[in-house]
Image (cartoon, rainbow, N blue to C red; front, side):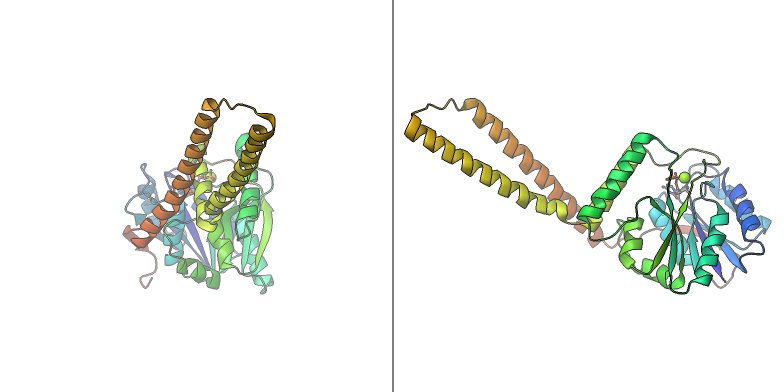
Length: 313
Ligand code: UDP
Ligand code: MG
């Protein structure tokens, strides 16, 4: 098998059919053999029924994984990669925002360039709200500064990689999965190509602004311990400032005999220090919570059903 296309699906009943047709049209004559692996990520609509129908249609080799609930796109992708057996693996969204024609370009690139292990697409111009776009840009800058890993600005999960990369990704079994971080962390030679995301074929995006914010926060906590160092930095700066202030107070008292109306300043500084301590405790708590969750070693996903054209795998 040359290519496995992994497609996570959450409430995509109207999209999976057209996507399969688009893939067949794009790959015919260009990719020698391929399979589509759809992972139903606990959809609330008729996605599983639509997937079953598409499997029965035998338009091309299809595998279906039905997760026991919604585990999130990251886990769904993991489940799909685990079932893949192609030399190359592609991660593709189900909503037709990413054209399968680009996948054939990625495959051709890997064929022609044995030095590269992975081709990733990044969005040059985003067709989305200005504010969201601005936030995403700032997030990538921040990640770049405080994390050890290198994230390409605008890079998405839309990528094609060799089996060696797929195995490396599977070996990362943490349950807080920030895929862009994982792709970068496993290394390998990656070639970036620009692409323009199309409008969603049907349905709405599953990412609200808050979900994105949580995702960004997760990325930062997963790939840097910088927030923990903030406590040391803030503590050092505050100690220095209070030392200077103490000197000023002593000098004023000794040489200028000034009195100190202190009530308001004392309350203000207690509140400030109390607030900062609570924030730092919260940050430390976030890291401890992660240790707690990871310590349970729960599986990344649970599949309740699996259907495959291939009786072996
Ligand atoms: N998705 C998923 N599980 C989720 C959320 C999303 O499998 O909990 C899938 C979704 O069906 C789609 C892909 O992830 O195939 C990207 O989701 P979406 O289009 O909502 O994100 P966007 O394109 O807006 O970033
Ligand atoms: Mg989308």
